Length: 159
Length: 388
Image (cartoon, rainbow over all chains, first blue to last red; front, side, top):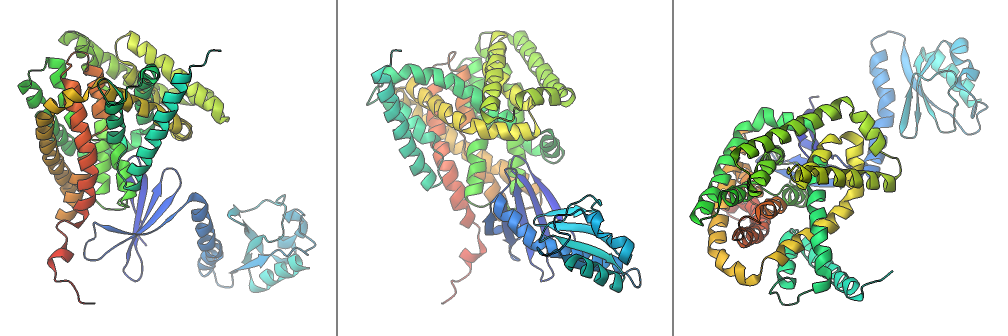
């Protein structure tokens, strides 16, 4: 997908792309942090039809909704290249024995061969977490490994 | 401590009055500038309700207002945006200058103004009001339109050109000869370059000192520094306004962002004082004789700005409807025309009424035309209405 970026001097940036349905969609990112989402009509591509505006906080929430599940999917794309390798998500339950303990404590890779490549924590993503990273209830672990390996990590975390 | 009852009362009533006017203006997404000028006319010399006690405060506030207007203009600035605009829209900026400064030049000459007055009138008809226009584009939800980058590029280049134009004007207006003006320009260009170089090399040191995490400290430091630099600039006759503009240019990134936020309320207060003071200085009796000239200039100014916007938008490959929207958006003149007039006002007393009337007209008509132009040349208008 091509995203066109246009500088709006004094205002911010405008991003533009066409979606699969053929709608031309624009997002104006203003310097002070708010956003405006617009759509260009087919008969006059110069004039934007305003759809809605988002404050900084609203935009963060929308990004979170759109962003978190996508991360695991992107890893799934990556693993498709290597036969036998797959990606999965494991949610850390509040009752887990590992909640509040460093990631290294799970010894997940030593025991299953699968790697925890990212932790999604509310709106943050911790990419390639170190063994010192303390797990919290509700964290989503992005795991890459064999099918059995991923299930192994799930059993360890959910125990 | 002695408190002046009359001062507090008059000032309070004025501010409440301005807030009512401002709210009404915003309600219809108008600029409050013409209303502030009208309030100044009504309250000032020969007006309907003179305010002797608050007058002094307004006069002092006005000079701080100019400094803050120019400081925030400089803060808006960003080299990346300027170079981007320069890459695409230099011909548009040249056309903008030639088409829009010429009517002021000719009118100034016809009115028999001295040279600094002619130059000031040319400047006043040249610069669009970036404040009014960017607010208007946001209110009309046109920021996403394809013609908007062309409009904003022209505004950025006009603002930058002020760094050269204002010192020339100030030197000539203070009775300097052409070579003093040249020196003034050289000092200004050297200071701009030095400011940019300094902000590039030592910007993080300056920024670190100015960018105190506490908002109150940030506001006091930036305001204090700006006033000192403005005073020094005035001392070497480069004008306080230009000095403040340079301080604004030096600050970049997150500091500039925060500075804009903490200074915005102060700027609004003192800028209001500035517009009031301009109204004070002009008596309504002088305004009427200036109307024919102002009307002629306004009519020309509308046409030349529409031509400028049309050309700039066409360079970006925009269709005629968008070109018209770009042209009409540029019509509004405001704060900078008034600042220019105030800098040269002493040399040509005839200038004040003309520019005040001109800004009153275009700061009101500009946003109106911009709004209406959304429907012009619209294919829906030509097509027969669909039955519902």
